[in-house]
Image 1 (cartoon, rainbow, N blue to C red):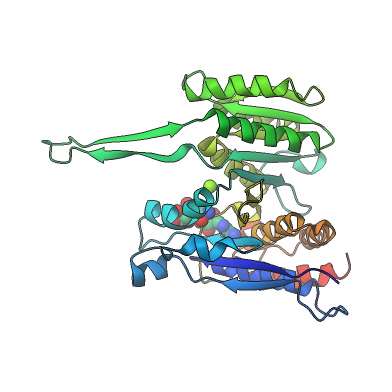
Image 2 (cartoon, rainbow, N blue to C red; image 1 turned 90 degrees about the vertical axis):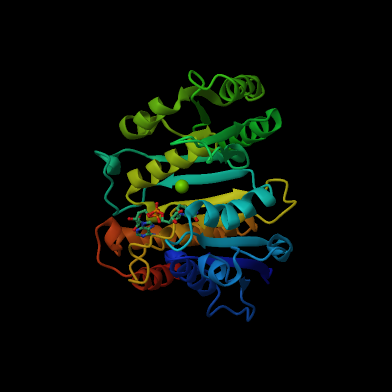
Length: 360
Ligand code: NAI
Ligand code: MG
């Protein structure tokens, strides 16, 4: 008898709801037809986002975090719509949850699926598979700063946007990344900073990385500047295994990684509170894609693969592997949405994945 998990769902805006529904359908199908009458997951949906904002003047209720706290995991779509400034929607919902729950480790695998064309030359014949680990609680997204002096003559306004690097924050994400690297066959971790130009926070990060590396003699550790790392992603991706970086740098690098794998719509992510004091949150890397929202062609693979990460986190690794195998079988059979060169709809992909779940 499999356990019953309680998962809070925040579909959010645009294609967020479309891909979340797709992933839910796939997970529910894992148990359809089995002897167990119990569904694996009990979903509780929250209608927070930009429409909620239009009615209530906030992205989620004041006690939103308290409403989410008791769940086993959170499943998130995407937030952002042209009716609300992006910094308000992002800070009011996604960042509020990540920071409020101290989900300090953001894990973003870059997965090259069979049958999906990559802009990288010879991607099919090279073994490409790496993970970006993003510091998810401070750094450039600490939200520290302000704007002032609009009353000055002319273009007199001043803005300060500070980055925050704490020894504790850097050390815990670096240590986490070493543990992930240790669990993989190649045992290679690369730390990414811009410590030549950002001489305080990022030099401290480099020093902490060198110190923690001594505790992991079995892991090959190296450091790379972020601009060079962007080039390495494109030119020498076979050199990548686990990559750890600050909030902004890893955000950019993980989008680059998913584009190299074929599309932003493919990339999965997990926001972990590794101590499990609060629920962790699983979401595709992409945003709400207003340009294709409502057309039924959003690629659901990023969301479905995020749901597989959620199964791993809940202790259901075998089920996670089954979902991943079904996704790979689907792309291998060229059931692809338009962003990766096909003409399948979101729903076609869901049906194809579900069909292959039972073959896997
Ligand atoms: P986006 O990721 O929504 O879209 C970028 C491009 O990728 C678009 O052309 C879109 O059609 C395409 N795309 C994204 N996901 C796709 C999918 N699943 N299938 C097929 N194509 C896909 O990023 P954009 O346009 O910069 O931002 C749109 C809104 O989303 C903004 O309000 C932004 O703030 C928000 N956003 C929210 C995020 C979150 O909630 N985690 C992350 C990134 C952006
Ligand atoms: Mg991003």
